[in-house]
Image (cartoon, rainbow, N blue to C red; front, side, top):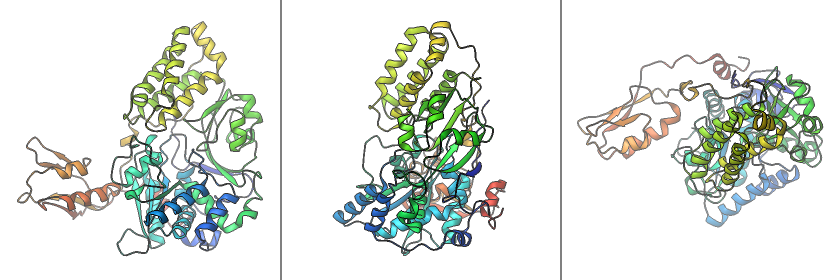
Length: 524
């Protein structure tokens, strides 16, 4: 069994909504409805904005949890020192199968996210805003929202805004991978550690945070730090967006104040009363047992004290009827396949670790368990990005959380339960399941001019391949929106001026109902 999460699952709220206010009125808050619900937003200076972020203890909601105020100050300092305008990036790349909170915000409340990002851009003096997304539904919603505000990537604008599409992969959501994609490269970590605040998009100081972080900033800017602090815990004020799935009756995204018991959140989603374990923080997170899940609260500190993690806000319980080692093996295999393939610990270590867990599951005995522990330890701290570390954390957590089941497999040849596949993973072939949004344009070659230089195939290999004769062979399809920028760059860089972009007469294919609702009047 494997039931992937829908793009936009059910949304619930505990207490008074802040991020999800208005969701009971419309499917998507267009600009007019957004302003009716939230009201106008006054600009702030960089110092005031940093002080606000620090006063509400705002940390990144994408998983790393870096203090937003510190990041904002670092970008401002680097920009002033270098005399370069900074860039603001919204990271809406949710490539993890268990996460949908940012997708929900981008689909249903895109203007709240844009509010926070534009507030930061104005405070920093940025002239470029980039939104990175992974799905058709989010791309449609964001492009519509930018158009509603009159924002575009045209030259001469006070602020140029554009959307960049990244693949739906685990590693493509990392900050360095997003910046590399924005710069025109593959959406993969570059293999070296660079601070975006110093050198990011086009080498400029870059403020990159995830979608919920900017939305929280916009809420706090309207409420002020005192009113914002009335919700949630004193040391972690405000609300948190969670994606709850796994062994639940109703997978959902839920907004809760910090301090709400985890058991209450699980109860709302219809989780087993006594779960065998709860995976917190997603597939780079940690398992906690039933007792810890009963006592823990929704907060970064409380989950950490229980051995868990808030991470990207994914909460995944499993029931007693499934084998936890088998469930973890499914995720370990997926994590190994998500490798960027750029360093040994990721390319070789993660498949070896997944294979080791498979050996343990299939009766390899103590020797298999010891080998698994060794390869998991060897992966830590040696990767070119954070994917090996996060995967090793997940594996180590599995070994420590399910000791009884582990002993049954190591000593008795199994726990006697099947693996039901309750943890969500993409369907096979998901990379090709969703057609990209066509731009209404296609590439064409003037064969009287083409000299077979081949540069175009290097720039946009998805649309142009070199034939056996060394000349380009073009895909007979419209240029998708997320490749439009690279197609234009291929045209500009053609030494023979043989490549051009033409308008197509083909109509845009019909959109799925959820996407039609996103472009509708608001009520779908």
